[in-house]
Amino acid sequence: MAKRVIPDIVIGRLPVYLRALQFLIAEGRQITSSQELGDRLGISSAQIRKDLSHFGEFGKQGTGYDINFLHEQLRAILKVNSMWDVALVGAGNLGKAIADYGGFKGKGFVIKAIFDNKKDKIGKPMGIDNITVQPVAELGETIKSLGITVGIIATPAEEAQAIARTMVEAGVKAILNYAPITLTVPSNVRVQYIDPVVGLQRMTYYL
Amino acid sequence: MAKRVIPDIVIGRLPVYLRALQFLIAEGRQITSSQELGDRLGISSAQIRKDLSHFGEFGKQGTGYDINFLHEQLRAILKVNSMWDVALVGAGNLGKAIADYGGFKGKGFVIKAIFDNKKDKIGKPMGIDNITVQPVAELGETIKSLGITVGIIATPAEEAQAIARTMVEAGVKAILNYAPITLTVPSNVRVQYIDPVVGLQRMTYYL
DNA sequence: TAGATTGTTAATCGATTAACAATC
DNA sequence: TAGATTGTTAATCGATTAACAATC
Image (cartoon, rainbow over all chains, first blue to last red; front, side, top):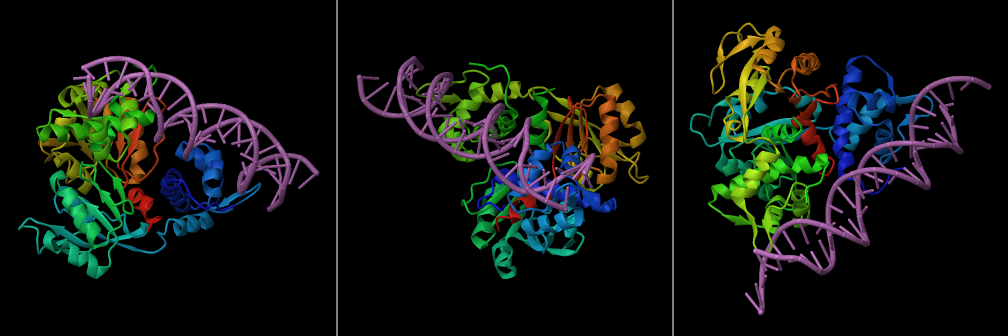
């Protein structure tokens, strides 16, 4: 039975379930079970069933889950069954790798604008869609005119907070932040952090 | 008082505390409080005090924490007060960005070997230290001979599991995985995942 | 001293797991 | 039918928070 308020931590696991389902589809599979999914992801089958139960009943007793059906349901729940336009700020090594990454398109995201302040970047085409890099000064206006709500920050730490502020003021509600700094944003704006150093330092304690 | 077993989730927050302390040091500050740290990081002061209490008593009532001292303590706890040698697999766009990234050195990590299978990469120098890219076939032997315990995977998803297996067999105990796939590794090996698509999909639900 | 802030306790809150009736 | 697996409940487990004595 669908519950009213879904824990953040449950939402956080759904993209991982979605990714696993895409692999099963690629393998040509039709049906899976909470047991199989759990084994693949290293979590308990009970947790998967409980997580899914927040949104509805997607399986069949004795059989399991129709992979394509569950895949579609999760895409709809996460709202990645349509395309989100994204603004990318930072066209350095990392920004270039992000812009060149082909993995966003099939997953609900398309980079529509790229910004940097370096003279040698501005005006040049970049990424898989050959988007012309704009000066950061145009960030706010472009976000507004394109109606963009998702931003990616791939700048040095020093610039990240100001970029976030500009993004938020222009209407961005979700920020993927590669800069190694905790951003301060209004509570109605979501931020996800990607910092390889933090990832590595989370493991060395155990070595 | 120092406790015997530390929750994973506590360890996971320490690198973020460490990062915040580095910013305070860069600002020339001497003393901070759990309140100030919490405000900056968007978590409660109680949580910070509780987290730190697992490892000892680092503060002074009425005063707070000596920033440099706490910074040193956290570096020691996380074992990033010395340098970890890292093997990087994948010299594509992403691998190149990682190899060129200057942020690892000051945080306890140095990339010591880079691997790829592309003919046009092998034998060429790469990254800030101009490391010669080796064929992936040499991964296991190089890890063993250099005594490397930390690996970074920046390959396509299809190759990632095999790379992880080779790394683990050669002695790697911590893997930072950029490939969009859940890895299967022995329970004494730690894995941290970085997938921008997962990050983005964790936010769209709320938009 | 008076004010501030720690470290810790106990209570609260939330997440995970085990178990099983329902049922395909 | 017999076997399998879901969705859900209740119990367990773990994390967070509020509060405050201790004390700098």
